[in-house]
Image (cartoon, rainbow over all chains, first blue to last red; front, side, top):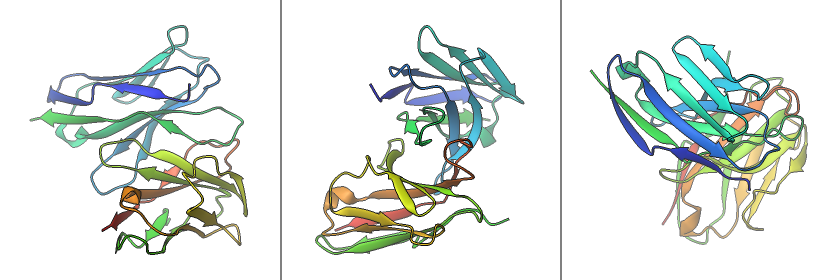
Length: 113
Length: 115
């Protein structure tokens, strides 16, 4: 019940295209859903996050879509750039608890020039 | 300002040895987390400190793993009798306050290799 399932495992997109990564969760107590970006040899860095009181959040080229009834959320990267090539992780936690994050398995994104 | 730092960046040890991994969180951050990231996987939670106390150690895999944060700042993850399966990147993260500020800032990690 603590799992967060992420797909696809890898993704190749042309420059300027849209990258879409999906996550699904089981624990209905989860109420904070961040996305992290990780470059090789670096720690994960927070990209964007959402709480379930909204269905969408946009920051620049990055958008989270959230479907509470389906227990799914997704990251959309618009106008994907080669510099976006990295591994992306979705995560979930319970607000007001310890803040420990449950991560998905990760998606390796390659944006071709 | 300075981010989360971890030392060493790489550690190679023999099976059965004891290792210590250090984390320096961002100054003023009261919450500190340890995660373990195996190759090709997402980070897995190990332990959470709020101040000096371990508020949640439910992710520690067994009693060979132990962590301390004696003065509420620097933390040390200690692994006894290391096994090859302990090989992974150990990540440390800190946040302003674990309960009300969920932006966790991660360090670059310590890559542990047990031979």
